[in-house]
Image 1 (cartoon, rainbow, N blue to C red):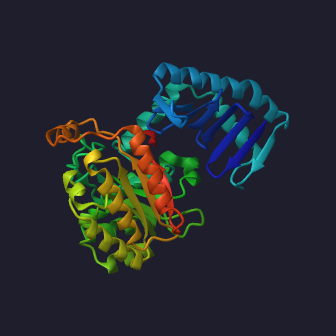
Image 2: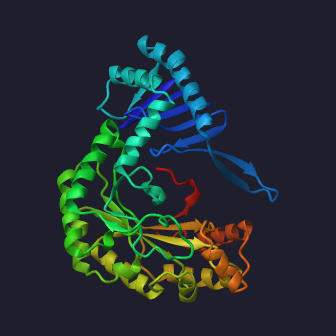
Image 3: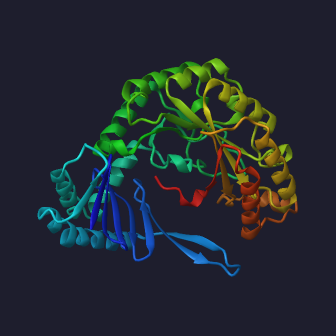
Length: 398
């Protein structure tokens, strides 16, 4: 048995087939049990994941959401393993502890273990209720920011009309007043408590938090710097989504100012390098706007995360989408510290996208065709300094 202690998080390795990770407040985050992995979000949702081989021989990841009854059974099972195996070994000093932080002692580990043993599903649900008192629904984050501390500068999306997106369909757009923002930050810090060191970055949400008026965004960063200093040794900076059609209106001087205050990377959902497809998806702006914005941000010292929607627009746009997207990415100055995310298109729940396909007589792409295009994009884009990664929106949990 091994316990791995890192800032804000503890992993209990009971065996190769029993691994449980909790934050320093005793909230279950991850488990590996009997060949299946489980992720639990602060919002109380659980996802089970495993791999299966398809008829073509390709391994694919499967996933499903757990029911409350299944969650309760697993919580009780994990607690029993900690009670019957880990706690006695800890008391007898018969367990190896790998220390990667000076912030916790062996007595702290024993206290946390006892707290977890005493935390049933009802207690976790009370914690979830507290979470929902602090946050409105968090629609999506970039994969590298799943462990960020989310600060909701805005609620919802001010555009909210893209055919492919329904993350914020039921959330009225609102800019959070500064006084409310201060209270929100303080509530988040209190909620995270001892687990705060796990959250090394801060993600400013929701959909396009940096679109707020310039005077307001300056106040936002002043407040952030007062509460979460960017020069803290464990802090990796501020991150946010940004739409090109609002970002292009901001000066390089503003981006330079925000970069000095800790803004490290913005994520641009450019979706495609093909102008006609972008219009078809009902997303404002153009690839040329995105190109100009990327040059401005890079000159200001801000890293970029580009999000490409692979499979959007169906078979009609397949080849031009790939061709122009590759051409676009090669035309902008991406380098180390920048990301390109390839997001497998998932049809939204709202009917507008499907209705547009049928209206225009467009056949949707199959999962295999989308995967072929992802592989092609990876081949064409890798080896140029920036990182190319997959972005599966169905696996998002916070």
